[in-house]
Image (cartoon, rainbow, N blue to C red; front, side, top):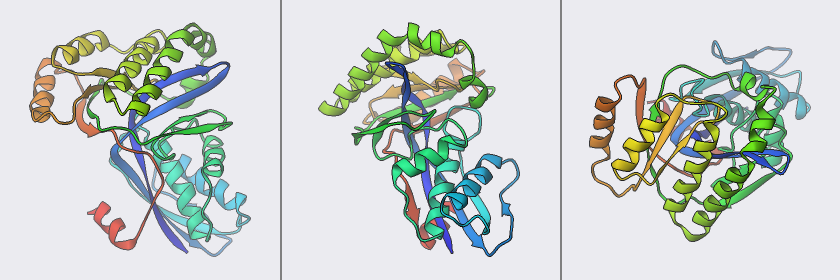
Length: 300
C-alpha cells in the first residue's frame, strides 16, 4: 500500500489566456520533477505531509475520499528541486503526483480527467501531468487536449526574484477583462505553437510563446522583461516565454548549441539582480510511476 509517482515541473507557460470565454494554458514542462511517495495507513489515521505542504495534504485527502477510502491515513514524502511561488509548477507537480500515487497505493490507476478534476479542486493546475504538451482548462478542468510530443528546446530560465500567489492571482477581478483584451494575440500565439508542433519546428513554438509573454506584460508586468528579451535575441535565442503567474522568464535556444553554459554565465554577469538561472530542457509532461530503484535514484 505504497506508491511513488513523478510529475515534471515547468518553466511557466508557452501560452495562457482565453479560448472564447474558457480559460486555458499550455505549460512548458521541463526536466525537473517532483516525486511524491504515499504510504497508506489503516484508519482512522491522519494524512501526514512535510511542513508547508498543505495543498498536497488536501490532494491526498480528496483522492482517498473520491476512491471511497476516507478512513485510511497516509504518510507522504516529497522530493522536489522546484522552488515555490516562481511559476515553475512546484505545487501542481506535488498535487498531481500525490493524487496519482494515492490512487496507485489504493490499487487504482486514475484517468487524466479524474486527476485533473481532483487537482483543480485544490488549486489552479498546470498541464504538466498530461502527456507531451497539452491544452488544459487549468481553473475548472472542463477540457484538455493532448497536442503531441514537443521538439527539443533549451531554456535559460531567469528567476527575477520574489514570489506570486497563484490563488490570489487567479482571483483578480480585472483578470478576465485583461485576457479578453489579449484574445487576438493569444489566438495567434496558440496557432503558432500548434503549427510548430505539427511541423516539428521549435522556432514557431518560440514565436508563439513570445507573443503570449508580451501579452502577459499587460497583466503581470515583469521587471527587466524588455532587457532580457533584447539580450536573448541578440545572443541568438528563438524567443522567450514567461510564467504568466510567476517570476521566471525562459530564454529559448537551439539545444544543439555548445555554448549554453557560457551563455548562462554571461547572463548572470549582465543581470546581477537575477535570483537564479536554470539551464533546462523542454520535455514531455506526464505521470511517471517509479519503482524502488528509480525512487532511490531520484533521492540520491
